[in-house]
Amino acid sequence: MSITTSRLALRPWTPADAADYRALVTERGNGVPALDEIRSTIARQRAGAQENGIALLVVTRLDEDDFIGYCGLIVGRTTLDEPEIAYELRSRVHNRGYATEAAEAVVHAATDTGRQRLWATVGTGNAPSLRVLAKLGFQHDHVSAEPVGDVAWLTRRLA
Image 1 (cartoon, helix red, strand yellow):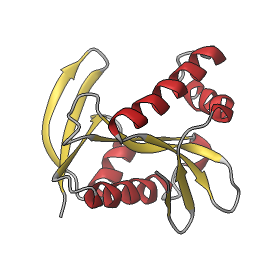
Image 2 (cartoon, helix red, strand yellow):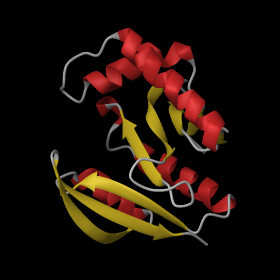
Image 3 (cartoon, rainbow, N blue to C red):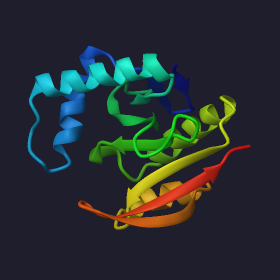
Image 4 (cartoon, rainbow, N blue to C red):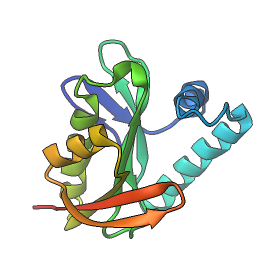
């Protein structure tokens, strides 16, 4: 379950990713999670991937071999047959096309599994993520009011 693009490698999580993932989560501005909590999250990610065959993958740059975030499919608000694409990158690599490149590779991989549709959810104020999804052909479906604010639901039909 690995994907390579011209600039990126998407690969399964390892316990060694804990410190980098913690740094990414810390960028959200909600405090610094305990390293044990991060390790547990990684273990759940790995177990979920084994159980249902879909996963968030670590994104690294090929040239630098550095952790820059994650991208993949999840079953959170959606189903295994129509999973949700999710991605998050370190702020130091924003505006370089990495999110679009990683997400496009995941869309192609999902298409290869025979799935017919993907979902995406994103805060309505997150213009950069909405632009990435628009580039990938996702279309607005509806907006839901949630405790974190309004969330846009988008879909993408797969070939």
